[in-house]
Image (tube, rainbow, N blue to C red; front, side, top):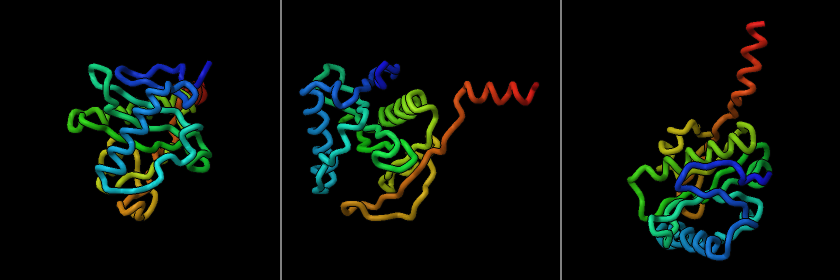
Length: 174
């Protein structure tokens, strides 16, 4: 079974780098540049060598012509030692609809399913910490500047899987 054989809720798709079509990869790189480089006036090297090791979670608009939500999931050790990473979180053209929250919840659920409820870490733009806090993320660093934008690192502590909770409950009852 591939890492991406795990179910994600519609309208999201979860693919490894190797599973992305050329058109999907182009759409991902285009929307990342549009949001992070052009919209946020932040020239930086987006193609950073982490995409090949990452899983990519994304959604298209209704007519499947524009990518409207995206993030990447980096296995532990790729971006952060001992923690699965989330990065390049964006929505485009669908802001204020709840799509970003659904994207983040789908990512956390996929990560918990694939990696068995690990620590998850990300670098949040400081103004968006409340968005991540709603999904259980807490700040774990002082604010810092990344490409001219204030950020703070946040983690979602490891959680117990249902199987682990059940086993723990049975050992207490026994």
